Image 1 (tube, one colour):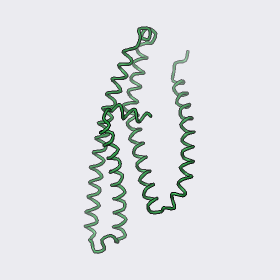
Image 2 (image 1 turned 180 degrees about the vertical axis):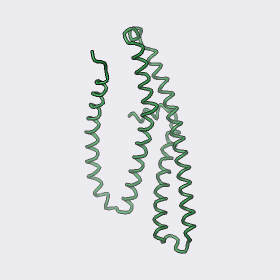
Image 3 (image 1 turned 120 degrees about the vertical axis):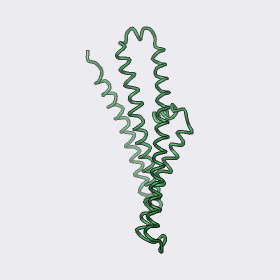
Image 4 (image 1 turned 135 degrees about the vertical axis):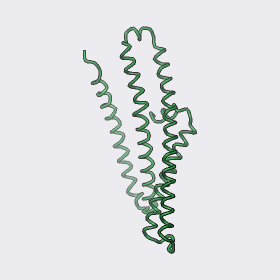
Length: 191
């Protein structure tokens, strides 16, 4: 839900879609590069080809990977900036619409500290978490597809593993939420 809200705050569905497409193409390029290297080592793809041919194709795939990574990072950074600007504006609006009683009872320093803390999470923590999550999801998906293609029997073993993984993540989410709440409570002032 947090990631979806973050991309919605970017206000550019087509830009978020572009980021996902670039992640997909980037991961496909990595798989093709690995496959090409294996084909080169085996020498079975083009039996009469020279090493310079294989090297040229491998360098081209590497250059394409670098370009795709740059474009993906550029699109992701722009998306993050848009999301940050919009979330900042929404947060500032909510704070400014607070009642007079809120401002009378809450010290200004506490409001500013909380605002700065929330914006720091939006600007620093959330983009890195989203990027890491996307990278992991696409890497695991690509690995899953490659292994399933090469060894179809893997799907029989993967099904129970995915069930165990899903139940473990559900338990982890509940525990992590409780730990986060305790951490936030421990940071509060002691009276």
